Every structure is written in C-alpha cells, then in structure tokens.
Length: 263
Image (cartoon, rainbow, N blue to C red; front, side, top):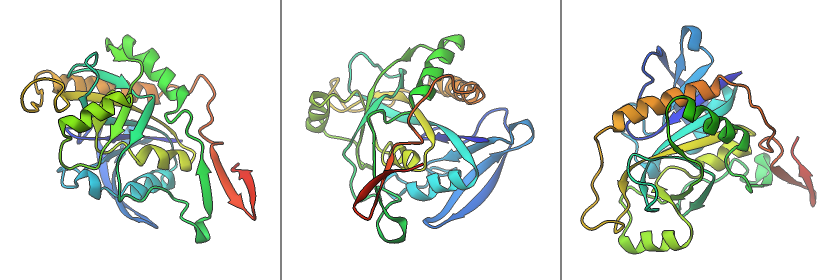
C-alpha cells in the first residue's frame, strides 16, 4: 500500500527523503508526482502548486492529481494547507487538524462522476476528513511536541486574490476558522475514490480585517513548523488506522433509478 503527502505553499520537498520525479497520465491530464526511493518507496509526494509554485489555485488540476495517486495505489493521504486565520483563537503559527469545510470556489471540476460513462453519484460528506486519520494525527502530534488545534472549519475561496474584510466577516459568521484557496474540491475527489484523506492547516497570516492594517505573512518560525508538520505526516502515515471510518462506503451511485451504495 502506498501513502501520499499533498503539500501547499512553501513545501516543495521532504527533508531526508530521496524523491524521484514522475509524470502520471490520467484521463484528466498529466500529474507531476515525486516517488519516494529506498525505504520510502511507499511514499508519494505531490506539490499542489508544482515544484516552483507555478500553478495558481484556480488552475490546479485537482482531478488529475487525485486520480494519479489512485493509479499509484495510494490509500491514505495527508494534505497540508497554508491558510489565513479567521478565528482569533488560531493565531499565525497555529496548526489546525481540519474537521469540516465551506466551499466558495467556482469554475473547478467538482467530481469524477459527470454522467455518461462515469455515471452519476452523490457522495456523503458528514465527516469530510477521515476520522481515523484525524485521530491518529491528534495522537501523534503531542508525541512530537506539536500543539494542535483539534478542530477547524476551512473556507475555500477561488483565489488567487486574497479575501476582502467583508468576505471574512461573512465567513466568520458562517463558522469558518481558517481560509485558503486549494482545499476544495481536493477533499471531495479523494472521498469519491475511497481514499482516507485528512488535512492540517498551517496559519501564516491573519485574514483580511481580523487585525488592523494590511495582510502580513508571518515568516519567523514557519520553516521549523513545516518541518515538524512533515515529520507528523510521515509518522502518522506509517501507523495503521486504529479505528473505523466510512471513507470507502460514502459514494452512492445512481443506476436505473435505484440508489446503490458503492462497494
């Protein structure tokens, strides 16, 4: 079984792990991945924006990325996001194990099930992030000296611009804790392909209007946090899931007017 790390802004390799670049052909286009070598040959690394951060959020081929991981035999995914903080209890430098999301993105292909040969399906998302993987993250974090926020609602916007103060006030009233540009539809696509997917958001700034003045990206200490986050991911992915989840039984296929739970 292979496992994967999907990384966002600021994470373009895994220290101490030799990676080999490979292009994967999928029905949705090519995806660039990096395969772990030697003792890490079970690990796949995917830099969401590309190795030189050349792909903006609204241009990422989310379907190709997730399909490529499936074709490589990946069953567990941990994803990292750089975000802005809406919730004043999550300051820059905070790490949040996400438990829900609000999707305000648009214009992105949302599903592998577009009708025709792919069929039509509805995916149950009561627990958007794998609860078994989340539990393992929360158990492992303190062992590595990490202080993790146990819950957080991720607000996904289109980007590439930052949000306005009025938008942030709205997201706050809707229950959003952090805001980013790449969390959806990635999480839904992973669920459609029956993968175990969980995510940690690293806050690098206050969202617009939360604090006076312009948005300022915090840089001090962030590099060290990113290294610790990758260590958390690697150790978590090496540990068998200790509890059950519904990640592999959440897709309801529509066939001849009958709802059938995908097996």
